[in-house]
Image 1 (cartoon, rainbow, N blue to C red):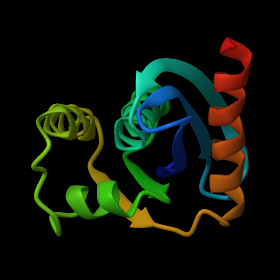
Image 2: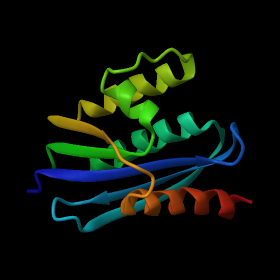
Image 3: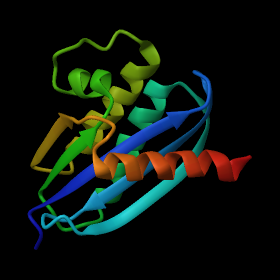
Length: 137
């Protein structure tokens, strides 16, 4: 049984709001990629896309026999909101924030870390998110 998964998520949009996509890279503890995912999500803001990517990633992660997930994102706003540093004032984001909290219940331990967009797996997730937008056009 794997103890935890390492998740990298990114949301992208052209214009803000605009056509948006999500990209997800899920690795096992050794760093091996076990799943990649991309999806066009219609029109959204960048923050909505970031949250949507995380929600989908947690749903996908629940299919694996793990008890914890480490989530990495280049969205400082989302990470700080989920870590309780910032309040969630936007009603649409509040709704997505609550959905994340619901998904978290599937795991014993969930951790959120902000990383620069240059991080290699974030770059991969970004590519996936942008490809989803491109393929929709």
